[in-house]
Image (tube, rainbow, N blue to C red):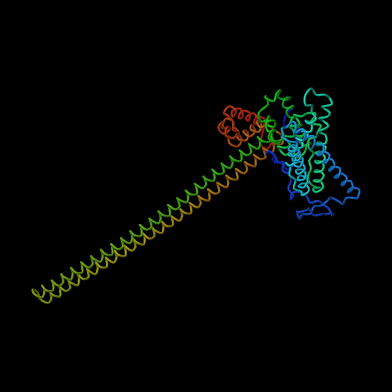
Length: 526
């Protein structure tokens, strides 16, 4: 019989499934209590607030209430009268008070203190502001009065007789009756002024007499972990005892049970039910899985950001290199064009000057040594040389045109470099788009893997598998997803990281997962 088939109780309403309940005995405030439905209202003296009765009292009920209050006052007076003389005489004779007047003053102080605290307790209950701890000093002082009254009847010396015991008991009856009447009156006042206040039955008195120690443990658990009712506390205790018996039946002893199976017994001291305690390992695994997935997502996102930053840096580098190359080409073309033009102009000027000088010299020589025909011949020669100079100038202009052509070609190459730079930017944009698509595909793959894991976990929840079986099935899914269905290809380190176990246990899980896959297990199978 598996422990997972135990009829576990449902989680209590208003409590978290895995967290202990808050312990508080603080009375509910006025804002949390429902206003009593009443048509008969009155104003509390000195408060300016209105309190109401749950319904108008009949004449018989009013007379009964008056009689009860008068009887309670009479009982208080009788108790004070009987207690006064007994306690005063006992305090003077046995407690060391020097005079009888001082002993009487001590007795009056104790009795007046009891009455003042009782009146204050009733007043605060009437004003819907009860003070829970006021009753404890009342009980303490009343208990002291009972002890003093009983001690006053004790024999001064000698053995106790049956009459002495009866006398001691008789001296304590009236104070006990008085406290009982006060407690009943306070409860009645509280129910009148707060008719809709929630009430929860406490531990029955007979249980305290029949089983004091277990009852104290039960009462302590109710107070510490805010168990609302005695019936609920009994049901939780019964569930825990049944679970312990089933553990012993299955494993022979509680100590032989796995640590996860002993969790309800360990966590019961913190107010967790059996179902809440058994759910702790699964919730811890879910939190660990969520943490690992968050770390993996953060790592992938950081890698994507690094790739994007690298792509942006490469694009910026290519743009800067293209701009530098274009500037260099432009400067080189301009320099070459200027050098060609300057050289052509210098050459033309030199040839023209040489031709003119030769023409002048020839003319002068012809005028001095030859006749007119020779002068004309010399002039013709000068014209020929001038034509040659003009031809040289034309050649210089041709070289200038060639330089302009070279500059145009260089500008065309510059434009081609700019076009290549633009193409590089386009390719970088394509790389960035491909990286984004790859990241999107990876995210979609992670989403499908998480969905498959969630369906597998839901199927395991329906089968009520143990933590070990859950981990074995998880390793089987890792073999299918990461190792292509071959168990020997799945590293033990991956199993140790995923399951948080040692290497030996990881090897056992991988072997068991391989056997499970051999039996036909698939993540979609139930």
